[in-house]
Length: 262
Image 1 (cartoon, helix red, strand yellow):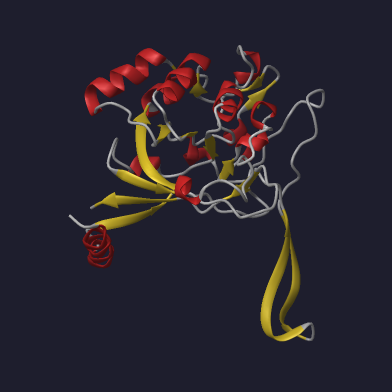
Image 2 (spheres, helix red, strand yellow; image 1 turned 90 degrees about the horizontal axis):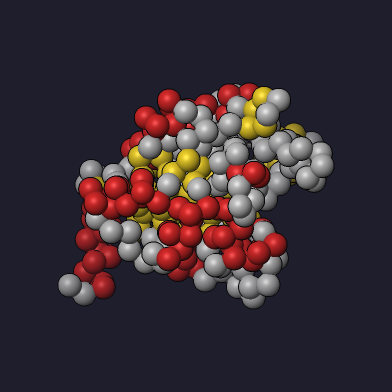
């Protein structure tokens, strides 16, 4: 089948509804939960602030617009390799220089929602990934791997979403060995429904924060605070996640979308 025919068929499928567009992004605004780091580690991203420029008034009689204060890694967001020290030297590792073909790729969705419901500190292992592959097929090079935990359903409240106590945050994520395995499979990136791409316990792993450290070391990408992964099949969806073309950006909020057969 020719490329032109393939695109024609996709356009027709979108118009007919046989391919659906799923919104994988959380609402972005002043109530958006932001990660809270211990003060000994570093500064935190401030909450989103929205400032009005005009609203059909003397400051602009025919238009309304705002200016925003927000961090690069706020809400549903894309992590570029430059976000982490392990990826800081890649010449194409900033948001304005990542090849645009990287922003559209197949998605593999590993459903571990039952495990995360039973244990907020659930960790995805290599054995668990291999069990998923045995059921759904091999993870192929060039695709995203997304961990479905249904954690996004907590996103309306910072307390339940961040889920921290005196011992630190408690949220699901991958082991270092799982990330190493996915990199060996040639994945383009790793995505999660939690505030960051790592588990809440990741600071105590070796290396610390392996989803960040190892993925960005390999010049791969991350997606955090994804939503509605429960509407995606294990295989067969196409993920679209394009960060802003921010000069030297380490990441960006995104409107992540998935194309899914109906």
